[in-house]
Every structure is written in C-alpha cells, then in structure tokens.
Image 1 (tube, rainbow, N blue to C red):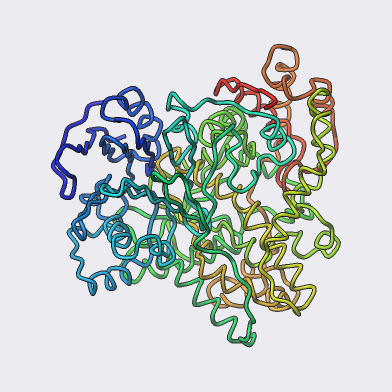
Image 2 (tube, rainbow, N blue to C red):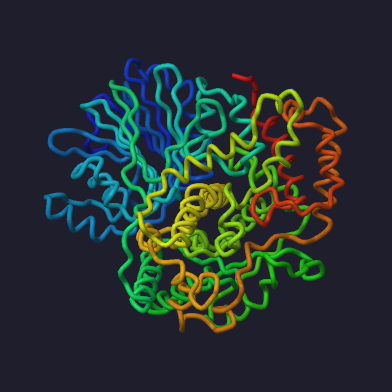
Length: 637
C-alpha cells in the first residue's frame, strides 16, 4: 500500500506518521510492544492489518509508527472532511500524545467551550481534535464527559502508556488480545487475526458460546480463544505495569420523583434532543423508516429539523419480493409494514426509497454477513441488513436508525408477559436443551448446558443495581432491562455496526443516548406501560409527532422474508453439507441432528422471535462457512 510521510505537530523526531493515498470506514487498530522495536518488525503485518479495515474507512488511512507503538486508522469522513486526519497528535504540558478514534461525539460544543476555558486552541472543526484534547485535559475522566458513540486509544509518548475506552452503550466495538509481549487492539476481529501472533482458534468455552448462546455473546468475550472485547462503559491502560481495565460508567438505580406528566415531558425532551444532536454531519444524512413507532419518531424529528434549513429528509425502507403473498399475521408480527411506511412518507413529505430484496440475494449474502461480523450471526436478519445498507450507501453516508428503543422502553413481548418475566433465564433463548441436542456426542458429554447458561444469567442478575424496598414488579423489569442492555441489545448493535460499516455507511442510534437510558431505568413500569400499551410512555411523549395510526400501531419487529423459497434454498445448502462428511462443522455438531432440523416444523425460536427454523438452518450454514473461511482450529483446552 503506497504511503507518504507528512509532518505532524506533536510527533517527536524519529517517529513517523503516514497518510496513505487510498480512498477506499472508521476502523482503528494498534500494537503496543514495550520491549521491542516495531519500526523493525511491523512491516510484517501493519499493511495486512490496515487492509482489513478499508471497508470501515474508505476515505483516508493513516499509520503512526514508533519503536513501541503502532497505531492504524481508516477513516470515514463525516465531520470536517478536510481536517481531522488520524492518527492525530498533540503536545500538552511538554508531553506528546497520539490518538486513533472511531465514532461520533454529540456534545462537542459543550466540551469545546470547557476546553477553551482551560487554554486549549483548536485548528479544526473535527470531533477528533476535541476528543484528543479532552483526554489531555482530564485524562481517563474524559470518558465520563462524552456523549456519543466511540472507541478510541491514546498513546502517551513519554510514559509509554496506552489509554483506551469504549462508549457507555457499546455502539462502537473494541477488541483486544495479547501475543507474547505485544498488546493488540482493533475495531474488528479480522484485524487482530491479520497479526501473525493471533491465531483463529476456539476451545470448549467457544463451542458452548456458539451453540448455547449464539448469535449472542457473553459480554467481553470474543469467541475466538484469547480474544476479548472491551465491555461498554469500560476503559483501561496498558503499560509496563501490564493491563488494567475498569468500569467508568454503570447503570444505577435512583428514586424516581417525577410525576407522570413530568416524566412524559422529560422523555420527549431527551428523545428529541438525542435525535437533533445526531443530525450533525457535513455529508448526506438519511433515516431508516420501517413504519414502526421508533423509526417514525426519528424520521419525524429529523424531517422537521432539516426543513428548518430548507432541506428534505431522505428515508429508506427494506422489503422482500413477493412477501405480501406469503405474509401471515402472528402474535409477534401482527401486520406488514408497507402501508405504514407510505402513511409516514406522505405525512413527512420526505424523499422515500423502498429497497426490495430477492430470496437468492438473501441466501448468498449470509456468507458476506459472516465476513462482516467475523462470527456466525442472525442469519437473514443480518444478510438483509447488509444488502439494505449497501443500497443506502449509494445515496448517503450517514443514516439514523431506531434500534434500542425496545430495550429501554420495554417493547419486547418478554417485558409484558408476566409468565416470562417470572421465569429465570434469558427470555429470548429459552431453548437451551434443544440447542444442546445439536452437539456432537463426545462434546456434549463435556458440557453442562443449563449450568453454563444459567451461570451467565445469574451473574448478570447479581450485578444489577436496584434500590431496596421497591415494587417487586418494577424490580423484575429493571432486571429485564439489564439483561436486554447487556446481552440482546449488544447482539443488535454488533449487527448494526458490522452490516453497515461493511459498506462504509455510518448508522447512528439516537435511542442509545445514555441520558435516555439512565433516566428510563428508574421510571416505574406503570408509567412505561401507560394505558396498557407496549411503550405507552414513549407513545404519550411523542403525541403530535406522528399520525395516530402509526403512533398506536402494535409493535412489529424488523421485517424478515416469509417466502417459502428461502427455507427451501437454505435447507438444500445444508443437505449438501450433510452429504459431505469432511465439512468442519461436524467437529462440533451432529449430522443426524442437522438432518432432523431440515425436516422440522417446530416453531422453537433459536434466538428471539425472528430466528425460527429457517434462520436456524441458516445459522448452521454460517457456522460451517465461518469455520472453513477463517481456518478455525479447535482444541478442548
């Protein structure tokens, strides 16, 4: 990869900063080797690591290199495209610092004002410079001040110390590992695997995750052996004293003293403010519009805001060819989306585009979705989003999406079903023994499925911060909210980040604003379920923003294909694998059980309401592809 050296303020003599002449989203990575010389050894892997990041950062790439630190960055330019180049360096108090950063900050004005009062000057409009100087001013405490989605790392040249942090809700990823005396981090697992010291290996713990919890993951666990992920709201240091990681933020209960009317008013303010903050962009911006409550709220606020400056919002929806022929109303999906999408598009006067996907596309893209996630995922729930984002990218660089409203406002069926709330275990995956039955016999003997899953569940419940003396029903819903934020929502955020960034599209999620989450955590369930509606509090808070038929529409999940051809196609592909006994999946899974799956009419969900038998078949297709493509090795230890 061609590169040229540029002068960069704050980089000591003898250290180098490269900007590559490649315009191929944001991704970050780095290697810290305190006892070695990376200027002599990193040529063996730095270009390979950077090349894995080009989909995340098509606009600009940079390399910072010194004896002990290699920092890599691939940039999607959203704010101040002409400036904000990374890695970015600065000097403060006679010491030099260099940073790589992935994300967006939404409280730049406030931070910049505080920093200016402390004597900082600014050369760009980029949030990159504001973030770096926030660290110079406040050190690790800066993370608590940030409102946004981020993962970043700062190298202190004089101390030979790396600081790193991840946003409170876990919207942006940060994976890490150690190889010998090297500490390696990156936005995606594939970048770690491009380092020669990191091997694509799994063990018994990995298999338990893949079969008993997948596509979910234990918080902080990378599935590959020795690969971890920094948890949301955590930060850390790596230096001569080793690796130290700690939480800088956690969800805390408090006494809710606001009346219902005050709560409604506060929720409306927080939701509208979060959306408006996230409309800041120097490149084209759009919104996903499904005709459901959450995306319609975002589109409504965004359309009104843009109209103030004479702009017209562009919205996108996804649909499946011939879906109307095969759609059957169910408890989880009582009606289809197109009518409501049209109602909202007409109401807003937005420029709307419907992207129609065909069944063969969905099946083929199952494997691109694995490449994007670096793990088996949510089957066509992933692949459809990947294809959707690819098309959206043709018209814009930034889009807003309604993820995470269900987790914080209690929209999922398991929040409102008393029997499910009182049942122990993860409500979206109440099928542990069924999952366990797919394991190859020798492996099954070494795994205690209920113990494995329930230990994860109880560990999460035990760590819930809940005030004593509260209403039992409220306490149960706070537990449910913790479970959803730390588990289910993380799977969806993984999906949103990887599937969108695969095509260089930045997707923002306003409902993930930590201020909303902090406030909603302690709001009584009777308020959240106002008038007996799912997300009744949110509906009441946005009165007047939406047409009534959309405002009071019963929740409908992300649209999936109902075409019978989909199951037929994935089943045939799995049958082809079953007919090939040397496929890698059979190290883990019984071919007999997979054959039974292709003949099943069961409606047991694999994961949430969207993954039933067709998606379960597709999950195993993804698992086999992943094992083969990533050349995964398996050992019991």
